[in-house]
Image (cartoon, rainbow, N blue to C red; front, side):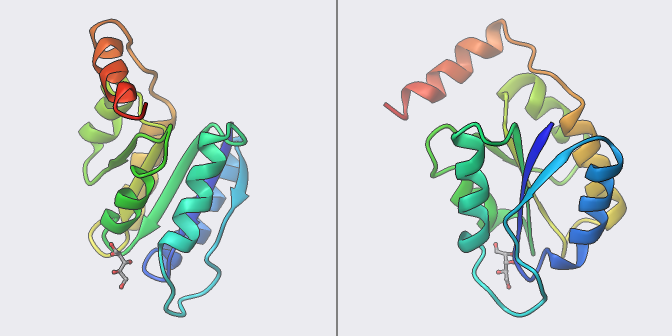
Length: 145
Ligand code: RB5
């Protein structure tokens, strides 16, 4: 799959591990930065990554900042994006099954690198269940009109 990646300086320490995981699991990455631990602004990297997902240049987005919260706030402002701020494996799975989320946001200051990789793996390998959940997601989509 094509994955749009974005992080800020808070998420940068995990970037190499995430890109390595994606490359070794057959994914193509569109990297929107950042590229160092120098202080920067998470919207500058999260928003372009989400726009790539919204425009269907990428299938899913992965965002990492210090907490994942700032990135998830940005992401959910963008039409077509449903972003889950994930801190546990159950949510990583259920948000795909129930919310049909297309972006996952995590925090490098609150979640270990190993868990971030586990959450990404679960997120990317879980499908939307549709059915009653589709009715609910459609009600979210209505809000964007
Ligand atoms: C940066 O210090 C930090 O505020 C950012 O990475 C993120 O946690 C914001 O939500």
